[in-house]
Image (cartoon, rainbow, N blue to C red; front, side, top):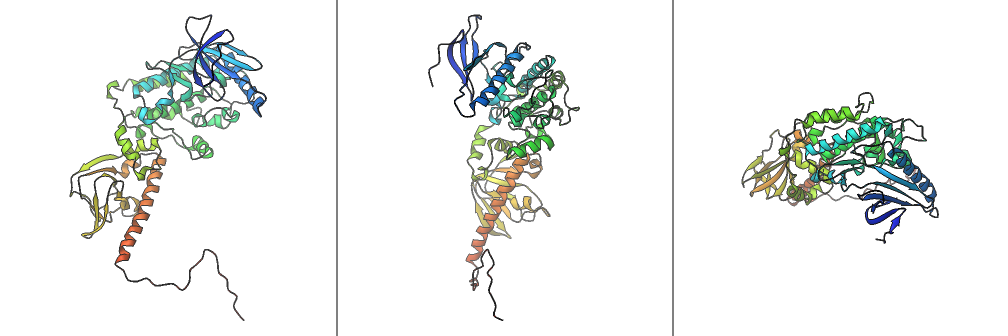
Length: 454
Protein backbone atom coordinates (compact mmCIF):
# COMPACT_ATOMS: atom_id res chain seq x y z
CA UNK A 1 0.00 0.00 0.00
CA UNK A 2 1.38 3.41 -0.96
CA UNK A 3 2.24 5.91 1.75
CA UNK A 4 -0.61 8.28 2.52
CA UNK A 5 -0.10 12.07 2.28
CA UNK A 6 0.07 14.02 5.53
CA UNK A 7 -2.70 16.44 4.64
CA UNK A 8 -5.34 17.12 2.03
CA UNK A 9 -6.59 20.67 2.18
CA UNK A 10 -6.87 21.64 5.84
CA UNK A 11 -7.38 18.03 6.97
CA UNK A 12 -4.65 15.89 8.53
CA UNK A 13 -4.87 12.26 7.38
CA UNK A 14 -4.55 9.52 10.01
CA UNK A 15 -5.01 6.26 8.09
CA UNK A 16 -6.74 4.67 5.12
CA UNK A 17 -10.11 3.12 6.01
CA UNK A 18 -11.49 2.22 2.58
CA UNK A 19 -10.66 2.01 -1.10
CA UNK A 20 -12.81 1.74 -4.20
CA UNK A 21 -12.39 1.89 -7.97
CA UNK A 22 -12.45 5.69 -8.04
CA UNK A 23 -11.68 6.92 -4.53
CA UNK A 24 -9.73 6.32 -1.34
CA UNK A 25 -11.33 7.06 2.03
CA UNK A 26 -9.15 8.25 4.92
CA UNK A 27 -9.76 8.80 8.60
CA UNK A 28 -8.79 12.42 9.16
CA UNK A 29 -8.63 15.21 11.74
CA UNK A 30 -10.50 18.44 11.11
CA UNK A 31 -9.44 21.77 12.63
CA UNK A 32 -13.14 22.63 12.97
CA UNK A 33 -14.33 19.50 14.80
CA UNK A 34 -13.40 17.54 17.90
CA UNK A 35 -14.35 14.16 16.45
CA UNK A 36 -12.51 12.52 13.50
CA UNK A 37 -13.99 12.72 10.00
CA UNK A 38 -13.92 10.55 6.89
CA UNK A 39 -12.34 12.08 3.80
CA UNK A 40 -13.12 10.61 0.37
CA UNK A 41 -10.33 11.54 -2.03
CA UNK A 42 -10.49 11.31 -5.84
CA UNK A 43 -7.61 12.01 -8.23
CA UNK A 44 -8.21 12.96 -11.87
CA UNK A 45 -5.85 11.80 -14.60
CA UNK A 46 -6.73 13.10 -18.07
CA UNK A 47 -3.69 11.40 -19.63
CA UNK A 48 -5.29 7.97 -19.41
CA UNK A 49 -7.46 6.94 -22.39
CA UNK A 50 -11.19 7.54 -21.79
CA UNK A 51 -10.34 8.92 -18.35
CA UNK A 52 -11.45 12.48 -19.15
CA UNK A 53 -15.02 11.37 -19.85
CA UNK A 54 -15.13 9.38 -16.61
CA UNK A 55 -13.66 12.28 -14.67
CA UNK A 56 -16.42 14.58 -15.90
CA UNK A 57 -18.94 12.04 -14.58
CA UNK A 58 -17.16 11.85 -11.24
CA UNK A 59 -17.13 15.62 -10.91
CA UNK A 60 -20.84 15.66 -11.65
CA UNK A 61 -21.46 13.04 -8.95
CA UNK A 62 -19.33 14.87 -6.41
CA UNK A 63 -21.11 18.15 -7.10
CA UNK A 64 -24.44 16.37 -6.68
CA UNK A 65 -23.28 14.91 -3.37
CA UNK A 66 -22.18 18.36 -2.19
CA UNK A 67 -25.48 19.94 -3.25
CA UNK A 68 -27.58 17.21 -1.64
CA UNK A 69 -25.67 17.31 1.64
CA UNK A 70 -26.77 20.81 2.48
CA UNK A 71 -30.42 19.72 2.40
CA UNK A 72 -30.24 16.50 4.43
CA UNK A 73 -30.07 16.38 8.22
CA UNK A 74 -31.17 13.02 9.59
CA UNK A 75 -29.59 10.69 12.19
CA UNK A 76 -29.63 7.79 9.70
CA UNK A 77 -27.97 9.66 6.81
CA UNK A 78 -24.23 10.32 6.69
CA UNK A 79 -23.59 14.05 7.11
CA UNK A 80 -21.40 15.85 4.56
CA UNK A 81 -19.31 18.64 6.10
CA UNK A 82 -17.22 19.87 3.21
CA UNK A 83 -16.48 19.24 -0.47
CA UNK A 84 -13.80 20.64 -2.73
CA UNK A 85 -13.39 20.06 -6.47
CA UNK A 86 -10.06 21.09 -8.04
CA UNK A 87 -8.62 20.49 -11.54
CA UNK A 88 -6.48 17.50 -10.46
CA UNK A 89 -8.33 16.21 -7.43
CA UNK A 90 -11.51 16.37 -5.39
CA UNK A 91 -12.45 15.38 -1.89
CA UNK A 92 -15.58 15.11 0.20
CA UNK A 93 -15.40 15.35 3.99
CA UNK A 94 -18.11 13.52 5.86
CA UNK A 95 -19.17 12.17 9.21
CA UNK A 96 -17.02 9.21 10.30
CA UNK A 97 -19.12 6.17 11.13
CA UNK A 98 -17.24 3.03 12.31
CA UNK A 99 -19.84 0.54 11.05
CA UNK A 100 -19.66 -1.85 8.10
CA UNK A 101 -21.91 -2.18 5.09
CA UNK A 102 -24.91 -4.53 5.08
CA UNK A 103 -23.19 -6.61 2.40
CA UNK A 104 -21.68 -8.81 5.12
CA UNK A 105 -25.20 -9.88 6.20
CA UNK A 106 -26.49 -10.84 2.75
CA UNK A 107 -25.18 -14.41 2.74
CA UNK A 108 -27.37 -16.97 4.49
CA UNK A 109 -24.74 -18.10 7.00
CA UNK A 110 -24.38 -14.49 8.22
CA UNK A 111 -27.99 -13.32 8.26
CA UNK A 112 -29.02 -11.12 11.17
CA UNK A 113 -31.86 -12.14 13.47
CA UNK A 114 -35.14 -11.13 11.83
CA UNK A 115 -36.08 -8.55 14.47
CA UNK A 116 -32.74 -6.77 13.95
CA UNK A 117 -33.13 -6.80 10.17
CA UNK A 118 -36.57 -5.24 10.44
CA UNK A 119 -35.26 -2.59 12.84
CA UNK A 120 -32.44 -1.64 10.46
CA UNK A 121 -34.70 -1.39 7.41
CA UNK A 122 -37.26 0.58 9.49
CA UNK A 123 -34.59 3.24 10.09
CA UNK A 124 -33.73 3.27 6.39
CA UNK A 125 -37.41 3.84 5.56
CA UNK A 126 -37.53 6.90 7.79
CA UNK A 127 -34.25 8.26 6.38
CA UNK A 128 -35.50 7.93 2.79
CA UNK A 129 -38.79 9.51 3.81
CA UNK A 130 -36.85 12.50 5.15
CA UNK A 131 -34.74 12.71 1.98
CA UNK A 132 -37.76 12.76 -0.28
CA UNK A 133 -39.42 15.48 1.82
CA UNK A 134 -36.34 17.54 0.95
CA UNK A 135 -36.86 16.71 -2.73
CA UNK A 136 -34.09 14.07 -2.90
CA UNK A 137 -34.22 10.55 -4.36
CA UNK A 138 -31.11 8.43 -3.67
CA UNK A 139 -31.38 6.14 -6.77
CA UNK A 140 -28.71 3.65 -5.65
CA UNK A 141 -30.03 1.99 -2.49
CA UNK A 142 -28.19 -1.31 -1.98
CA UNK A 143 -26.44 -3.08 0.92
CA UNK A 144 -23.08 -1.49 0.08
CA UNK A 145 -24.56 1.97 0.67
CA UNK A 146 -26.12 1.17 4.05
CA UNK A 147 -23.74 1.13 7.03
CA UNK A 148 -24.57 -0.48 10.37
CA UNK A 149 -22.61 -0.97 13.58
CA UNK A 150 -22.90 -3.65 16.30
CA UNK A 151 -25.61 -1.65 18.07
CA UNK A 152 -27.70 -1.45 14.86
CA UNK A 153 -27.07 2.25 14.38
CA UNK A 154 -27.70 2.87 10.69
CA UNK A 155 -26.32 5.35 8.16
CA UNK A 156 -27.25 5.63 4.48
CA UNK A 157 -24.34 6.91 2.47
CA UNK A 158 -23.27 7.78 -1.09
CA UNK A 159 -25.82 10.34 -2.23
CA UNK A 160 -23.59 11.13 -5.22
CA UNK A 161 -26.18 9.60 -7.56
CA UNK A 162 -29.07 11.38 -5.88
CA UNK A 163 -31.73 13.00 -8.00
CA UNK A 164 -33.15 16.41 -7.21
CA UNK A 165 -36.75 15.80 -8.21
CA UNK A 166 -37.34 19.52 -8.65
CA UNK A 167 -34.66 19.82 -11.31
CA UNK A 168 -34.46 18.27 -14.78
CA UNK A 169 -31.26 16.43 -15.63
CA UNK A 170 -30.04 14.41 -18.62
CA UNK A 171 -30.97 11.00 -17.29
CA UNK A 172 -32.68 9.48 -14.28
CA UNK A 173 -31.13 6.03 -14.69
CA UNK A 174 -27.98 4.91 -12.92
CA UNK A 175 -28.12 1.88 -15.20
CA UNK A 176 -27.73 4.06 -18.29
CA UNK A 177 -24.95 6.00 -16.61
CA UNK A 178 -23.10 2.74 -15.97
CA UNK A 179 -23.26 3.29 -12.21
CA UNK A 180 -25.34 1.32 -9.73
CA UNK A 181 -26.52 -2.23 -9.23
CA UNK A 182 -29.19 -3.54 -11.64
CA UNK A 183 -30.26 -6.29 -9.21
CA UNK A 184 -31.60 -3.61 -6.82
CA UNK A 185 -33.15 -1.33 -9.45
CA UNK A 186 -36.86 -0.78 -9.85
CA UNK A 187 -38.62 -1.65 -13.13
CA UNK A 188 -39.12 2.04 -13.93
CA UNK A 189 -35.44 2.78 -13.30
CA UNK A 190 -34.32 0.05 -15.69
CA UNK A 191 -36.76 1.34 -18.31
CA UNK A 192 -35.37 4.85 -17.96
CA UNK A 193 -38.70 6.33 -16.81
CA UNK A 194 -38.95 9.43 -14.58
CA UNK A 195 -38.26 8.56 -10.94
CA UNK A 196 -39.74 9.53 -7.60
CA UNK A 197 -39.33 8.28 -4.02
CA UNK A 198 -40.98 4.96 -4.86
CA UNK A 199 -37.87 3.76 -6.71
CA UNK A 200 -35.86 4.00 -3.48
CA UNK A 201 -38.57 2.09 -1.58
CA UNK A 202 -38.48 -0.65 -4.22
CA UNK A 203 -34.68 -0.93 -3.90
CA UNK A 204 -34.99 -1.02 -0.10
CA UNK A 205 -37.55 -3.82 -0.50
CA UNK A 206 -34.95 -5.79 -2.47
CA UNK A 207 -32.41 -5.15 0.30
CA UNK A 208 -34.92 -6.39 2.90
CA UNK A 209 -35.61 -9.55 0.86
CA UNK A 210 -31.85 -10.17 0.54
CA UNK A 211 -31.26 -9.71 4.28
CA UNK A 212 -34.10 -12.09 5.20
CA UNK A 213 -33.30 -14.90 2.76
CA UNK A 214 -29.64 -14.62 1.76
CA UNK A 215 -30.64 -14.33 -1.92
CA UNK A 216 -32.01 -11.75 -4.32
CA UNK A 217 -35.68 -11.91 -5.33
CA UNK A 218 -34.76 -11.85 -9.02
CA UNK A 219 -31.67 -13.48 -10.48
CA UNK A 220 -30.59 -14.32 -14.00
CA UNK A 221 -27.84 -16.12 -15.85
CA UNK A 222 -27.16 -12.87 -17.72
CA UNK A 223 -28.19 -9.19 -17.50
CA UNK A 224 -30.98 -9.58 -20.06
CA UNK A 225 -32.58 -12.42 -18.08
CA UNK A 226 -32.25 -10.45 -14.83
CA UNK A 227 -33.90 -7.38 -16.37
CA UNK A 228 -36.73 -9.49 -17.80
CA UNK A 229 -37.46 -10.96 -14.36
CA UNK A 230 -37.38 -7.58 -12.61
CA UNK A 231 -39.91 -6.22 -15.10
CA UNK A 232 -42.15 -9.30 -15.45
CA UNK A 233 -41.67 -12.02 -12.80
CA UNK A 234 -43.75 -12.35 -9.62
CA UNK A 235 -42.00 -11.77 -6.31
CA UNK A 236 -41.11 -15.06 -4.52
CA UNK A 237 -42.56 -15.71 -1.07
CA UNK A 238 -39.99 -14.67 1.53
CA UNK A 239 -41.60 -16.86 4.25
CA UNK A 240 -41.25 -19.95 2.04
CA UNK A 241 -37.58 -19.26 1.39
CA UNK A 242 -36.99 -18.70 5.11
CA UNK A 243 -39.64 -20.36 7.33
CA UNK A 244 -38.50 -18.27 10.31
CA UNK A 245 -39.94 -15.17 8.63
CA UNK A 246 -43.58 -14.46 9.61
CA UNK A 247 -46.20 -14.86 6.88
CA UNK A 248 -47.17 -11.19 7.31
CA UNK A 249 -43.80 -10.19 5.84
CA UNK A 250 -44.84 -11.59 2.44
CA UNK A 251 -47.46 -8.85 2.03
CA UNK A 252 -44.94 -6.17 3.02
CA UNK A 253 -42.35 -7.40 0.53
CA UNK A 254 -44.92 -7.77 -2.24
CA UNK A 255 -46.11 -4.19 -1.78
CA UNK A 256 -42.56 -2.82 -1.65
CA UNK A 257 -41.68 -4.67 -4.87
CA UNK A 258 -44.89 -3.85 -6.73
CA UNK A 259 -44.22 -3.21 -10.40
CA UNK A 260 -47.32 -1.00 -10.49
CA UNK A 261 -46.29 2.33 -8.98
CA UNK A 262 -49.82 3.07 -7.75
CA UNK A 263 -49.84 -0.13 -5.67
CA UNK A 264 -46.37 0.33 -4.18
CA UNK A 265 -45.74 2.11 -0.87
CA UNK A 266 -46.22 5.83 -1.44
CA UNK A 267 -43.66 6.89 1.16
CA UNK A 268 -41.13 5.56 3.62
CA UNK A 269 -43.37 6.21 6.62
CA UNK A 270 -46.03 3.79 5.32
CA UNK A 271 -43.37 1.15 4.67
CA UNK A 272 -41.99 1.64 8.19
CA UNK A 273 -45.46 1.39 9.72
CA UNK A 274 -46.08 -2.04 8.19
CA UNK A 275 -42.61 -3.22 9.24
CA UNK A 276 -43.27 -2.23 12.84
CA UNK A 277 -46.52 -4.22 12.80
CA UNK A 278 -44.59 -7.36 11.75
CA UNK A 279 -41.78 -6.63 14.20
CA UNK A 280 -44.29 -6.47 17.06
CA UNK A 281 -45.22 -10.14 16.48
CA UNK A 282 -41.66 -11.51 16.58
CA UNK A 283 -40.08 -12.88 19.75
CA UNK A 284 -36.44 -11.78 19.83
CA UNK A 285 -35.21 -14.90 21.65
CA UNK A 286 -36.26 -17.36 18.94
CA UNK A 287 -33.21 -16.77 16.75
CA UNK A 288 -31.23 -19.95 16.01
CA UNK A 289 -27.90 -19.68 14.15
CA UNK A 290 -27.72 -21.64 10.88
CA UNK A 291 -26.11 -25.09 10.96
CA UNK A 292 -22.78 -24.49 9.21
CA UNK A 293 -21.60 -28.07 9.92
CA UNK A 294 -24.37 -29.58 7.77
CA UNK A 295 -23.77 -26.97 5.08
CA UNK A 296 -20.08 -27.94 4.94
CA UNK A 297 -20.97 -31.63 4.61
CA UNK A 298 -23.29 -30.99 1.63
CA UNK A 299 -20.76 -28.65 0.04
CA UNK A 300 -18.31 -31.56 -0.26
CA UNK A 301 -20.74 -33.85 -2.12
CA UNK A 302 -20.35 -34.12 -5.91
CA UNK A 303 -24.15 -33.92 -6.32
CA UNK A 304 -24.13 -30.32 -5.05
CA UNK A 305 -21.06 -29.10 -6.97
CA UNK A 306 -23.14 -26.88 -9.27
CA UNK A 307 -25.28 -25.44 -6.46
CA UNK A 308 -24.40 -21.90 -5.37
CA UNK A 309 -23.94 -21.33 -1.63
CA UNK A 310 -27.27 -19.53 -1.29
CA UNK A 311 -28.99 -22.42 -3.10
CA UNK A 312 -27.34 -24.94 -0.79
CA UNK A 313 -28.63 -23.06 2.27
CA UNK A 314 -32.07 -23.21 0.67
CA UNK A 315 -31.70 -26.99 0.27
CA UNK A 316 -30.97 -27.32 3.98
CA UNK A 317 -34.12 -25.36 4.82
CA UNK A 318 -36.52 -27.38 2.66
CA UNK A 319 -35.05 -30.90 3.04
CA UNK A 320 -35.05 -33.29 6.01
CA UNK A 321 -31.96 -34.73 7.69
CA UNK A 322 -32.71 -38.40 8.53
CA UNK A 323 -30.96 -41.20 10.46
CA UNK A 324 -31.96 -44.90 10.52
CA UNK A 325 -30.44 -48.22 11.63
CA UNK A 326 -29.28 -51.03 9.35
CA UNK A 327 -31.81 -53.26 7.55
CA UNK A 328 -34.57 -50.62 7.44
CA UNK A 329 -36.80 -50.58 4.36
CA UNK A 330 -36.82 -47.01 3.10
CA UNK A 331 -38.78 -47.46 -0.14
CA UNK A 332 -40.75 -50.31 -1.75
CA UNK A 333 -41.06 -51.04 -5.46
CA UNK A 334 -44.48 -50.10 -6.80
CA UNK A 335 -45.10 -47.67 -3.95
CA UNK A 336 -46.65 -44.33 -5.01
CA UNK A 337 -44.30 -41.91 -3.26
CA UNK A 338 -42.23 -39.14 -4.89
CA UNK A 339 -39.69 -38.73 -2.11
CA UNK A 340 -36.07 -39.28 -3.06
CA UNK A 341 -32.88 -39.04 -1.04
CA UNK A 342 -29.11 -38.62 -1.02
CA UNK A 343 -26.83 -40.84 1.10
CA UNK A 344 -24.75 -38.75 3.50
CA UNK A 345 -23.18 -41.62 5.44
CA UNK A 346 -23.60 -45.42 5.16
CA UNK A 347 -24.83 -47.73 2.40
CA UNK A 348 -28.15 -48.77 0.85
CA UNK A 349 -29.14 -51.65 -1.41
CA UNK A 350 -31.45 -51.30 -4.42
CA UNK A 351 -33.42 -54.42 -5.37
CA UNK A 352 -36.10 -55.54 -7.82
CA UNK A 353 -38.34 -58.57 -7.28
CA UNK A 354 -36.23 -59.71 -4.35
CA UNK A 355 -32.98 -59.60 -6.40
CA UNK A 356 -30.13 -57.20 -5.71
CA UNK A 357 -29.57 -54.57 -8.42
CA UNK A 358 -27.11 -52.00 -7.01
CA UNK A 359 -25.36 -50.97 -3.81
CA UNK A 360 -25.00 -47.22 -3.21
CA UNK A 361 -22.82 -45.23 -0.82
CA UNK A 362 -22.04 -41.66 0.24
CA UNK A 363 -23.19 -38.98 -2.19
CA UNK A 364 -25.40 -41.35 -4.21
CA UNK A 365 -29.09 -40.69 -4.95
CA UNK A 366 -31.92 -43.20 -4.50
CA UNK A 367 -35.67 -43.11 -5.16
CA UNK A 368 -35.32 -40.53 -7.92
CA UNK A 369 -37.35 -42.49 -10.52
CA UNK A 370 -40.67 -41.79 -8.79
CA UNK A 371 -39.96 -38.06 -8.78
CA UNK A 372 -39.11 -38.01 -12.47
CA UNK A 373 -42.07 -40.23 -13.44
CA UNK A 374 -44.78 -37.67 -14.30
CA UNK A 375 -47.53 -40.30 -14.74
CA UNK A 376 -47.59 -42.92 -11.96
CA UNK A 377 -45.01 -41.53 -9.50
CA UNK A 378 -44.11 -45.05 -8.35
CA UNK A 379 -40.80 -46.41 -7.14
CA UNK A 380 -39.27 -48.94 -9.54
CA UNK A 381 -36.90 -50.39 -6.93
CA UNK A 382 -36.94 -51.24 -3.23
CA UNK A 383 -34.35 -49.58 -1.00
CA UNK A 384 -32.97 -51.05 2.26
CA UNK A 385 -30.24 -49.62 4.51
CA UNK A 386 -27.25 -51.98 4.73
CA UNK A 387 -25.59 -50.05 7.57
CA UNK A 388 -26.61 -47.32 10.01
CA UNK A 389 -27.57 -44.60 7.56
CA UNK A 390 -27.70 -40.80 7.46
CA UNK A 391 -29.46 -39.34 4.44
CA UNK A 392 -31.01 -36.15 3.12
CA UNK A 393 -34.67 -36.65 2.22
CA UNK A 394 -36.16 -34.44 -0.48
CA UNK A 395 -39.93 -34.21 -0.40
CA UNK A 396 -41.36 -32.89 -3.69
CA UNK A 397 -44.12 -31.11 -1.76
CA UNK A 398 -41.42 -29.06 -0.01
CA UNK A 399 -39.52 -28.66 -3.27
CA UNK A 400 -42.49 -26.82 -4.79
CA UNK A 401 -41.76 -24.05 -2.28
CA UNK A 402 -38.16 -23.72 -3.43
CA UNK A 403 -36.84 -21.12 -5.87
CA UNK A 404 -36.87 -21.93 -9.58
CA UNK A 405 -33.07 -22.07 -9.56
CA UNK A 406 -32.96 -24.79 -6.87
CA UNK A 407 -35.62 -26.90 -8.60
CA UNK A 408 -33.72 -26.68 -11.90
CA UNK A 409 -30.47 -27.66 -10.17
CA UNK A 410 -32.15 -30.76 -8.75
CA UNK A 411 -33.66 -31.71 -12.10
CA UNK A 412 -30.33 -31.36 -13.89
CA UNK A 413 -28.38 -33.33 -11.28
CA UNK A 414 -31.00 -36.10 -10.90
CA UNK A 415 -31.26 -36.47 -14.69
CA UNK A 416 -27.47 -36.92 -14.83
CA UNK A 417 -27.68 -39.54 -12.07
CA UNK A 418 -30.37 -41.48 -13.95
CA UNK A 419 -28.37 -41.51 -17.21
CA UNK A 420 -25.27 -42.79 -15.44
CA UNK A 421 -27.31 -45.31 -13.43
CA UNK A 422 -28.79 -46.71 -16.68
CA UNK A 423 -25.29 -47.04 -18.08
CA UNK A 424 -24.19 -48.98 -14.96
CA UNK A 425 -27.21 -51.30 -15.19
CA UNK A 426 -26.56 -51.81 -18.91
CA UNK A 427 -22.98 -52.89 -18.13
CA UNK A 428 -24.23 -55.38 -15.54
CA UNK A 429 -26.83 -56.75 -17.96
CA UNK A 430 -24.19 -57.08 -20.70
CA UNK A 431 -22.15 -59.46 -18.53
CA UNK A 432 -24.98 -62.00 -18.65
CA UNK A 433 -26.08 -61.51 -22.27
CA UNK A 434 -25.04 -63.15 -25.51
CA UNK A 435 -22.67 -61.77 -28.11
CA UNK A 436 -23.77 -58.62 -29.94
CA UNK A 437 -24.42 -58.50 -33.69
CA UNK A 438 -21.54 -56.92 -35.59
CA UNK A 439 -22.53 -54.20 -38.07
CA UNK A 440 -21.24 -54.09 -41.65
CA UNK A 441 -20.39 -50.38 -41.56
CA UNK A 442 -20.24 -47.37 -39.21
CA UNK A 443 -22.79 -44.59 -39.67
CA UNK A 444 -21.43 -41.06 -39.86
CA UNK A 445 -22.94 -37.77 -38.78
CA UNK A 446 -23.33 -36.69 -42.42
CA UNK A 447 -24.87 -38.33 -45.48
CA UNK A 448 -22.86 -40.74 -47.61
CA UNK A 449 -24.07 -40.40 -51.22
CA UNK A 450 -23.29 -42.99 -53.82
CA UNK A 451 -23.84 -42.58 -57.57
CA UNK A 452 -25.72 -45.53 -59.08
CA UNK A 453 -24.98 -46.76 -62.59
CA UNK A 454 -27.83 -46.50 -65.08
